[in-house]
Image 1 (spheres, helix red, strand yellow):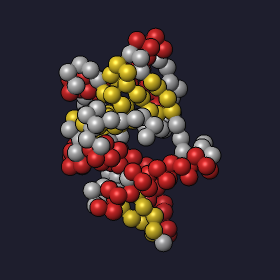
Image 2 (cartoon, helix red, strand yellow):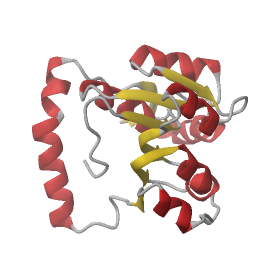
Image 3 (cartoon, rainbow, N blue to C red):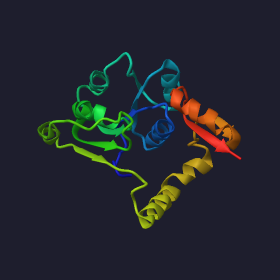
Image 4 (cartoon, rainbow, N blue to C red):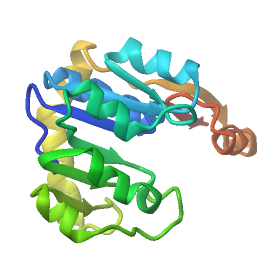
Length: 193
């Protein structure tokens, strides 16, 4: 919603194998956008491809800036969904298209963002960050209602399905955390009673 992804645009999703990433891939494809992803293993990239990602970038072996430029005939991604934050800031600006949007929703790198604002200005790009936690109750209610109207029909029809890596009982919550911390999971990890 915030990044205003449009049909035909290219979305670059960092962490394509994560719960957020697998959700973003599916929603972007349902919006008729093209999807590129970064992930750190062949297994995660294969899952991303099965969900509709077309450009698969192993960030351990490939440079995502080079790869997204090659996949878009040098234009870059129209929208970048970033969970890495500071460590990727300057490179995201290089990877984004003219008039593109960079949406930062996490800072898993735990690094401050350092980049040249002039480069962002040259691309007339937008760089912003957001989190649901910092929003008011009224804003969160509006977001939920919007998702209910726009996304729920895809869930009901089966066109969108959450990717569940594993289900853990509350008693095994430590195992769920270990799985999450290992970064071996693909999709969401769910705690169940």
